[in-house]
Amino acid sequence: MQRLTIAQTELLRRPGPGPSLVLLHGIGSNAESWLPLIQALPTDWDVLAWWAPGYGASARVASPTPAAYAARLAAVLEALGLHQVGLLGHSLGCLFAGAFARLAPGRVARLGFLSPALGYRVPAGAPLPPAVAARIADLEALGPAEFAARRAARLVFEPERKPQVLAAVRGAMAAVNPPGYADAVHALGAGDLAADAAALPFPALVAAGAEDVVTPPANARALHAALPVGSPLHLIPGAGHALPQEAPAELAALLHPWFACREGTRP
Image (cartoon, rainbow, N blue to C red; front, side, top):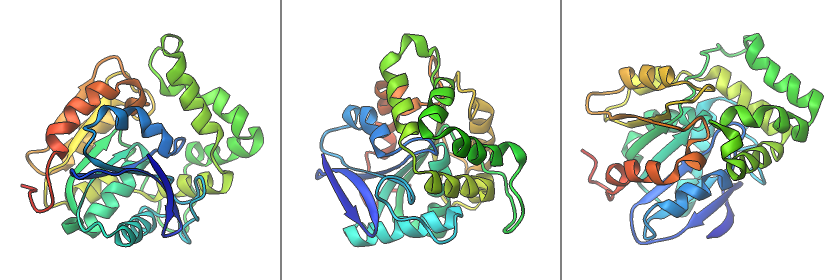
């Protein structure tokens, strides 16, 4: 596993000769949150996970909209010489994946959405909904460590039975950079994943934890309804929001046939 910085963006990369798959984490996570899933995926795949702009050592975007994060992703792929990749978003990362696929569909070999956050369609310059703005206020008031201690358990189904998963979720949330997190909240407010999905010229996979209370299965169903015909939908029993950490083997089994394709082979 390599750790590198490309186009002002920190990345984890497990290089391989197989298909390239890029992983975009959620709002309280980071690149390392994907490690359980990466370890369950075929070892020859070229897998990359970013620290989103404003997370880790990644520089912030100038304007926190999904399109701005998608533009940064394009710069990363260009710097790496990757013309076409599989793209998989989790939670907030789904908004960035959807924006990128809408802006540059020819660069996406296959697309997937996990535990999708749909966005709040807030116009530029308009205030965030109170419940969304409260995320920023809570982080500022509590600090990252206490913020994580209060919120992490909600992301895991039956957290008392998954102490290692809970610890990893809490650790990632406690590591957020408050300015980068605030940018991500504004991107969440601006996003409209259903509109991006409806504009796609190809199907995409959707999966969610059946017990997710953060982005519940209804989100996955709404996204699936907006996608082109041929898009599969999977609900994974016994899993909550932290799907790549709670059910990596089950998830890898779903993703393998979908993403095991090379450049130019998308249906």
